[in-house]
Length: 164
Image (cartoon, rainbow, N blue to C red; front, side, top):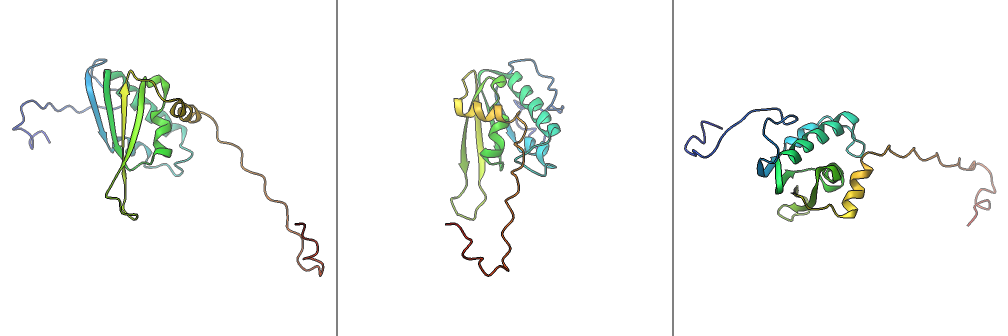
C-alpha cells in the first residue's frame, strides 16, 4: 500500500498490533475499521455466545480505539456483523462513546447487507444500548427443561384424554 500511494505525501503507514497501539492518547479525530474486528470473531462457533477469549480480545482492541480517539472523535466500523451480534461489544460505557448504526446495501431481499457503526467519543450511550453492553458480561441462562413426555398413543382413549 505504501508503494501504491507514494504519490500521496500526506499519508503515513504504520504496522503494529491493534491490541497495543503505539500512538499517544487522544491522537486521532477519526478511526476507521473495515473487517479488522471480524477477524477476532472468525473462529467463533456461536455468535450468540462468544467465547471469553474472543470477548476479551474485542474489548482490548476497542479499549485501544477509545484511548487513541480525541474527545468528540469518531470511530467508524464497517462489517457484515449484524447489530444483535456486534452492538453489545461496542456498547460498553467504559469506552465513553455513543453508538449509532445503519444497514447498507442495494435493498434486494436476497442481497447481503453490511453495517456501518458510528461511535462518537464523549457522547453518552442510549440506555437501551448500555443495557446491551451490560448483558454481554452476564452468563448465558440455563437451558430450558425438557418438555413433559407425551401420553402413549396406543390407548384407544387417546383423543378423549386431550385436555383443551
